[in-house]
Image 1 (cartoon, protein in one colour):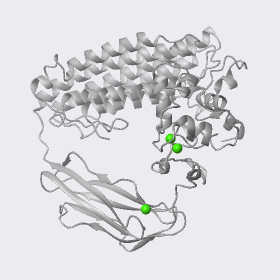
Image 2 (cartoon, helix red, strand yellow; image 1 turned 60 degrees about the vertical axis):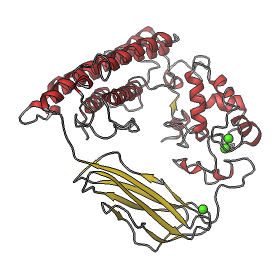
Image 3 (tube, helix red, strand yellow; image 1 turned 120 degrees about the vertical axis):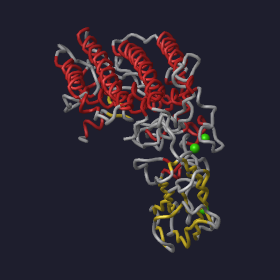
Image 4 (cartoon, helix red, strand yellow; image 1 turned 90 degrees about the vertical axis):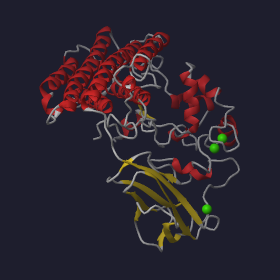
Length: 491
Ligand SMILES: [Ca+2]
Ligand SMILES: [Ca+2]
Ligand SMILES: [Ca+2]
């Protein structure tokens, strides 16, 4: 990154208004980082002059750490950034015994990190940040310390005859000495369907490094399979650390083709409707913000909520005849065990859980759409503002074009996947739908070329060296994910 670009990016928020728009500080929307440093008087170069105050990534963007999440909850209530900071002060987000306010204002320690979670900071935090996680604690590091990435692994269902791998990362979390692992093996009584792949003990792990041992699960029978991995080392206070593995093997039973077809036909139809409303409402709201009008969030949320309840009543609810009404489950529909990332905490069991997964994926789709088309996704409000009526109209075209293209991809691929359920030999839907999809993609890409003014706009087409096909590519990826989720396609 060239240095002048670097200066324009603060915690992942590109301050495009300074680049493209009128240089008028009053018009530029203040971002979170500015609000934090200004309100608390954090000096440049101070320990807390870092995006890592709120984010897991030290340079910002992505998931917020416990303190960032607390502030985010306040923002969701519609408060200003500064008010959200103030109303987060009495909470102890990282549970180290000191409130966020005391940590920031008195001790100048990180309000999102304690010695129990500081190692979750990623993307090169400063080498000494473990010295200002907890007030009065000189360092979270001890001379010899072992740490695992997890103590529990497993899957709700792994098909008999297939394999699932759980990677265990063993870290040397100490400050001074290597960790000597003397043994890493299952305790007696482990299911024989588990095996280990990794270095053979004894082995040493230097300071700051880690070693991966894979627990491999290949069920040969249905039901629960348990194993406990015990890792012995010279860590003085934890001579043994453990990983509990617990998984279920199953044999796949599917509902008859015509039942799956009838159910998924309804689901995809209802989902396309929900997607359309959801994108329309968020697009409208963000267009308002870019145009300098406050978005009517109440109206947006009411419309989305009513679309969601309509969707839920037809997918797993009282008006569902073909799926729940026909006693189908996610597994009878050949769905994976869990919803795809970022919704993978949702376990797919009932049709209701499928609806929850689809709603979650639609949120992710909206975030991707807004990021690519407009440059910002919730909970952040757009930092940019349209410089003219023509620029606003351009932004509107981009947003509605994206929603349309996503809808076309979703419907085209969805119809094809539906036919595949009952087809004698399945079609490659990407190939079969290529013509329609390419047309929809070119349309949204071409929308920008027709703009007479793009002043102040952000998003993938307004970057330094934009990919002229980025909007179409984004629409395809979004629509494809929605269809994969609907039909339980793992790719
Ligand atoms: Ca704290
Ligand atoms: Ca702390
Ligand atoms: Ca230890």
